[in-house]
Length: 474
Image (cartoon, rainbow, N blue to C red):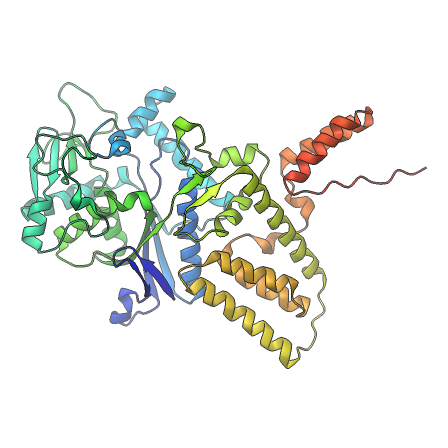
């Protein structure tokens, strides 16, 4: 199996740390989860689907995976939007003010919504889903280790990691995952005059005097809260060890968050590399442009539901693009994905109904093996899901026996995660919104409003469903 490693900037043969320890089929994988102050966007879910497909692929190739994901429920400041994650307001506190709730209630609500959404997209739940607020002690301990090694300094608003000291003491270069080390003060971030270097970042933020935050804790440096970057190192090392195999995240985290993780982790332990393979998913565009809440196009899974689409159609849409390439979301593209998924489901139902198993000729036996091998090659080549989907459709259209088609597709779906084994018929796949439209159309037809009924029929068919009226008895 080969995977692109952002650290080396090339596709590499995957060899987990366990290979040298006599445990070649054990893999530790960590994914940066959501900041639970609002609903994740479908751009966020593209990253989580990438993690899911990677976990499924590793298992498909025989690896045992320990899968960890964090929930950021404190410390991620709004300044990250403008290039400095150490400035601005805590997103949970901002969410609390927006909705008139406590920050703790905000974190609980959006964490639960995220967990519920795993089922909608058929995402495998992580073995550990770790909220930052439940690991404050571990984060304080990590900051103390860095302090003891001379890698921190204190200014008025907190304890900061000293990147220059890290490079001098460890001999390691800071920012290898990105070009962050080339940023000059004021070029992208608002300069903090107290910081020794614009690359330095907060490990622990001290609560302002006279201000009472909803989320704050005692520490050796004063009452405050952890910096955003600290949590992933602390929790990654707690559950996967001081070195582990794979770290997944969106490409936006490659510029600051992940280089900071690397520096503080290697600074604390002295072990290089902290993570062997860094896997980053590309941005999801909308109508070919940037996605953003200010633009009104930061769609969520709830928007997908309300438009009458099956969330698994969104998963199918993700699979049509390679994870390292930007993918442009449009409602028309999602409609195409819904149509394709429905056709695949219909094919599976038809194949399941043809239960007769025939003796395979040598030629057809070779074809079955060839399809299996082509799928394995696609997924083993840096998770080439578009090519893997193409193999699925080749199988559907092939002349091998139906039972063997069905078995192959079920095997492939262990990786693709489209829940094809649970397909019982297209009727059961019709979303409630479509059923409501069907009932509305039928009522219009009974009232003789055929033009309006026909308009609804076209809307339904645009979503990938065929409307066929029963013939009336005379």
